[in-house]
Image 1 (cartoon, protein in one colour):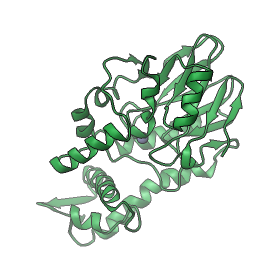
Image 2 (spheres, rainbow, N blue to C red):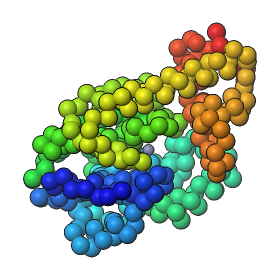
Image 3 (cartoon, protein in one colour):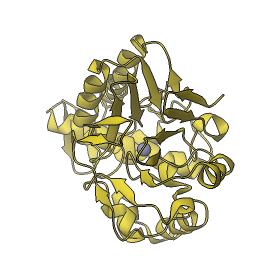
Image 4 (spheres, rainbow, N blue to C red):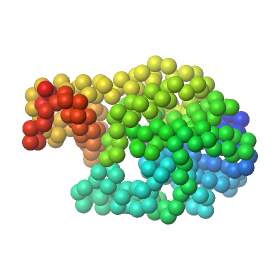
Length: 296
Ligand SMILES: [Zn+2]
């Protein structure tokens, strides 16, 4: 996968096709300032970029670690992010709370991973990017698009002159959207997907896997949204008989089958199932009786 230049914007492809723990980044030579969005693509590429071309600011689409992986390279550059997504970056305990990690051993494990693998360093300050703000970098103008759901303060960026839309983690992958964190929302995710679909772009950049779309993703938008309803349908079917959260998670209805590392994916499966159960209960489609759920 190649890096690509579009005027003053550069798609920087990530290691391993931008699969977790990597992503694809976007570099903007704005004229007045150079910006890197989501610096988690590749240690080598980002180090070179810093040394050869320079980076004045780091923007994050949201708070997840596979987007700030190499942010420490730009320690002297100001961080820009939505206010809503900033708290987990200020404190490791808040970070773990936002993932819903409760068990002490699990927290200890992730603390170590965040520090050693993702170079987590508590951030003291940030410039907050406002929803729907227009940012003028001199030669490049950026329209901020608030796209909550994946995280509550997730942002996408539209470059109207270049007709390029940076989607962030509404990544159009075949796995489908992630909304498993404590503050994620299925309903907001659906709204954000629909909002992004309406933006009159000619090129689309997603943070993982395929990454760059030079033709309208078309049906991929619907497929991506439909995965949410398919997951819900599978859970509803399974709940024709009553089951506990543990039993539903163990059925691997979302990932389809056990995936490795088991501990990581078991936990993710459980988070997504839990989110769907809350959603279905709120819609009155399932009933909860103590620790068991069943279809109405
Ligand atoms: Zn994310």
